[in-house]
Length: 574
Image (cartoon, rainbow, N blue to C red; front, side, top):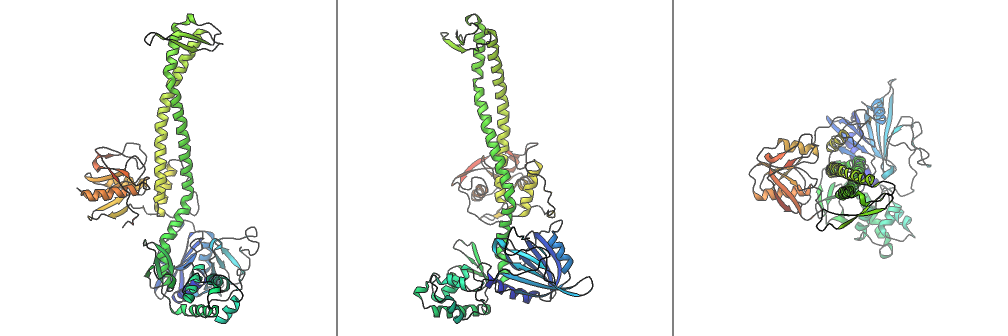
């Protein structure tokens, strides 16, 4: 279910039990809108993740290691200064809404005991992490909100922290059937919509679940049900949920995770549910890949625009060069007219616009019309044609060279765009960016929040039905390392005449089924992945060479065979 007020309340109870009394040992801010506190409690280090990212705003314990910036942001440094070494006094949800408060007690410079708060507001694109001092004033926040952004409530250092405006709804943790019935009296519409309007902390999915428990249908209408009985059921369900915690991740028919729930979901009982011991464990597992994919998408947006812009530039350039090459095809015409005019200068009159001369290069010497510049003499007109011939000849040579160069650059950029779409980790994105910086497509990163040096990324690893290991590169650096370290008699594969990954079957003499399986992977991780039939070349590694001075990922190969395969279905590497 979405991270609504009800779910946050359950998470807050869990975090309060696990962390209260613990000492804050470490604070990092891996992203602008994300804080990780390492808290030692009961002899164990636990990481509390507080995220205010728009699509994945949440709070829970995590086991995922986050990369720390070389220079911590201001909010992180302030938190380190004020609360490192402090003890967690309590963690609670406020106002039955999507607001979490982490209260930490520490000693200030004078030795006095002071309590400060980290307040997390989980409200979609308006989510925020706000650090509040003991006097109730804001020390700093992940997002500063001035009067230009919001005329209702500013969030700036030095201002007193105020809760967001109340909605006037019934608190979900103390709602009664009578109060809910009175709130709904006179209202018409789907029951789930009325629940969301009248009870605090209700997301649309939670309201649908409560409506299903009350009536057996998510879309039950108030005009078709006993409203008082439904209100009694909703109030009873809300009261019983804290004692029936059953964290799980729900999967659809394609075995893809679609949601994480803190309590049994009767309305989606048809879905496969994978249980977890705690809500934090379930949320950590559910959001790990989703959050990484969202971060990669955000961070790769600039690179994607840069690559598309350069691809379009190369395409325009290639069109002009091809046009110039076509224009140079009149080269022989210019030479012929120059020679014929030189041999028949006596037929041309100065000031004439054209002259007909015999074409002695063809049988029967038919007459050929030659256009003249009336301002030039016959001899000068002949020289003009020879100059046009020489210019067209030079243009043909230059255009052919430029077309080859531009085509190579276009192929490289399309390959990088394909590699960008395969990035699933920050290390892979960093390697791709560094390569583009090296070739001048992207300016060097001068960001003060640059992350510490990441360990090199690794190629994907698959196991064929025969048990053979198959390695697949995800970027040019991986491709070069993969091909460079493969044994001479191992099979190397690549999609034919299109950007794609280098693929290696580990070990010698694989069977045909394994080669076919590897070819389907090569098709999947190529530009032709959307096609139903992709040509894939394969040869021994000994026949794959990298030309001197070639760009990363570029190779030439011989003695290849070609398979036409359907790309493999999306699968997970091991």
